[in-house]
Image 1 (spheres, rainbow, N blue to C red):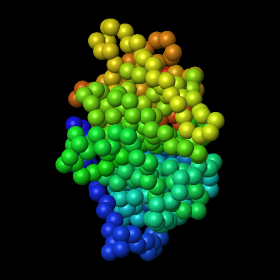
Image 2 (cartoon, one colour):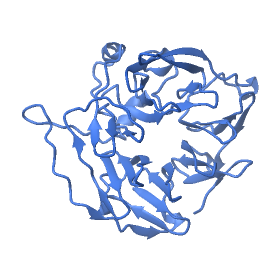
Image 3 (cartoon, rainbow, N blue to C red):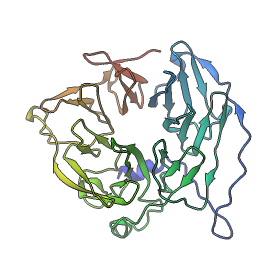
Image 4 (spheres, one colour):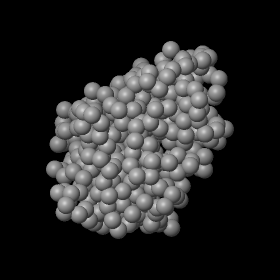
Length: 355
């Protein structure tokens, strides 16, 4: 299973104490985030995460080289020498004050424009709450607990028990990491927060109740397509897609809290492609309402509501392995890749970018 292979990429964090409650460590002193000026060719090829900040700077998160900030002229690299907890970046987000948060395999760092810090996490587990402006982050995959940032501090939360947890442990009795490990978080158009887990499907919190969706196509507890929920995306019609094209989900909000859902057949892929459906890594919706899907090694797919178009992503060595797709504030589509830097859509196809 890919789930076990991913364990090799995860740095495990285990919190212990004599009385069962983890002590709050003193925060490290802020480090002046001077960074190093680099050229585009020095950025490396494994650039997985792309984010455009409110000031229109671009941030690129890498697999092993830290993070890069690009203002249109200069590229600045920040890594562990400048205060990052780890050089393997999982996510990049921004709060209402313009602070940048860099999630990595060892926690979350805050960049305020001058320094990089490692903010405190509130212990014990916080209460489930939901407010506009909250930021949500995945914890280490081994832990399976999300972080909520409310503008004042970080709170580690515990998921309510998934009905398939016991079946998972029975099927995989020797697995020591959490089946609740989080691959992705997503805030939908109604402000609900969603979580894609490694083995137990999708969770949704609406501010009143938490709901699990753990159909077979979304969990590891069967022989179906799922290898963890890498992507959660709402399309232009308000329909949800969870990392595969086999099914789509119509969500209904309950008046008293929680959601109900209806699962329907996903994409009708033309027979000429030779497949009935597939899993994917990432998705987005462009300014025209087209749904874009990124696969690991089979290119990018566009669905306009009727027709499906595939865009192969290749270099001299063959198919490029992809990780993410991102739409910036100008509506431009970017690709993050494992081994070939970043690509950008030029209106006809995706071309490699040299900053």
